[in-house]
Length: 158
Image (tube, rainbow, N blue to C red; front, side, top):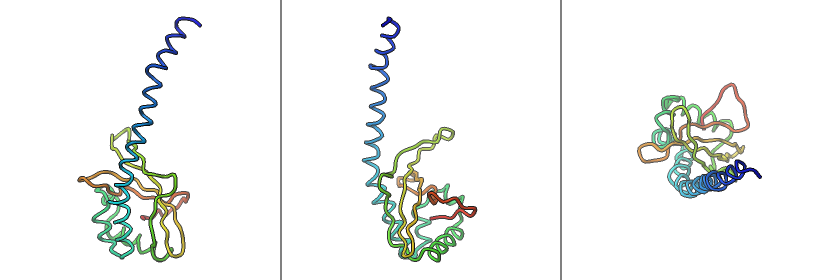
């Protein structure tokens, strides 16, 4: 083995490999710490308000400013009523197995968000929904929702 090859191997073992291991460890720790907080402070209260029919409260309390710019309260309430009409009453919202919320960043805006998958269980159907959430004003807020594995010309809010 030539000296150059040995130096490259040493660089990989001393610098690159430890950085990769640390990155995986840091992502795991962040997910382990934030996941329960997201469940208790966002998913459960949001589901409770939707089940109670308090769509305006769910909109005001649990959506980000970006979400509210994209969807007016009237459009949001119409979407929730359309979900009720098509799928029946909401029973639970649960995180999909192996789809815990994980941190991500937008490389262009440097906006940090979390992405995860949820199962909305309605009386008549089970719907897989993806959420992007952000931290805003010290609380987690829904930044975007989309139905997983379903392309629609008329996307709806969940």
